[in-house]
Length: 239
Image (cartoon, rainbow, N blue to C red; front, top):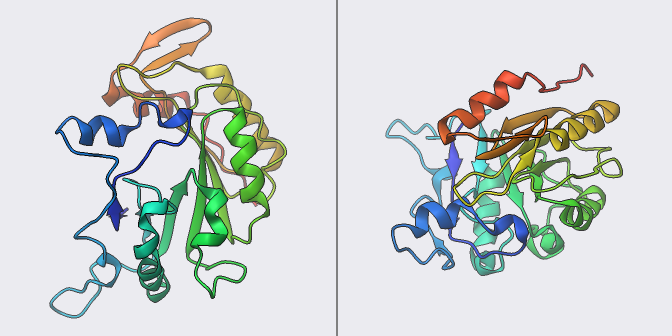
């Protein structure tokens, strides 16, 4: 699935940002990760090949702004043009995650109405406080496709009040040597909540430090997604 990063760089806003991968991987090269800048891929959805076809193929899910936050304040001057590309490419589905869902009304285009058919909005939550703050807003905003990403999961979360109308829940631990531990019981609890509400559930990765049956594991980065798959607990309801 293609990635589109119209801008890059971010600023930490809650506990889930403490060991952010953007800071880890971009910061190691001495980059000022807190500086948000427009990338050379800004117009990627509109770019065409020599034969006139779009470079991004129809029906793709486009992971959008995963090296920043689509609603970050420092990109306000560019977002209007980004929406133009999203509207132009109604044959693509754009998925973005945000920790700034409270800025929703400041960031949507004038013709949003009850949402664009080709936009999927997910909120990123790491603990109960952020789940309550962000999911309560997401649930009530006019968005046609919405979901919740519990990653990095650093504590137990009860999503029962927010799952109606959600199209997915994705869960994962925190990566990196300084990552906080993720307990398998928290993951199983979220899975049971999703089953009760008939919401698709994906266990994406364990994170570096993982607890199962009170045993603490340190899992190499290359094995974290593999171990999640081996757990075989993803849930895809028949609707």
